Image (cartoon, rainbow, N blue to C red; front, side, top):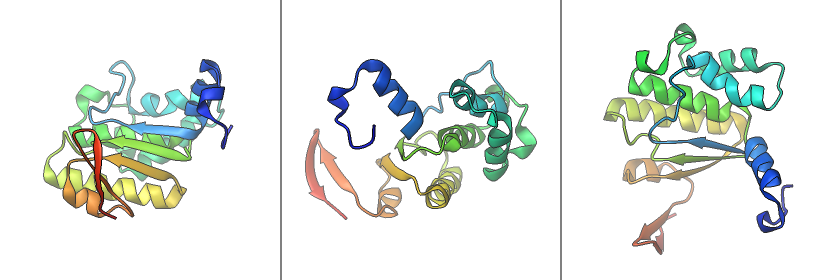
Length: 159
């Protein structure tokens, strides 16, 4: 499906493409409260039929520093820990492209800096294209290229 016009795909094909090729990290984490950290990361892998879902999820949670919090539910985790679970979930299926919408917006500065470092580390390790929306100029400066939008219009390319 890569290289194919999205307009030529039906809804099922677009959903399959999203599931196979695209990851998302949201400002508000979007974890399921009824699932623990391990289950939240396993879910997209299980939906994709991966037999290694548990092992892969545990590896990623270890990688983001949460190996000791596998069985904790979102309400038992700090904001930074919840965002690390969300990042592990986003990278679990090894997406070709990952969209991050204000990934540090709900975090204090120190936690946001750690989350940023983690995003860029996983990005390099997995070779994922990272597309990020942010109002944080320091975060934008770490990107290879940046576009500045004002009132919905491209103002300048600040790369």
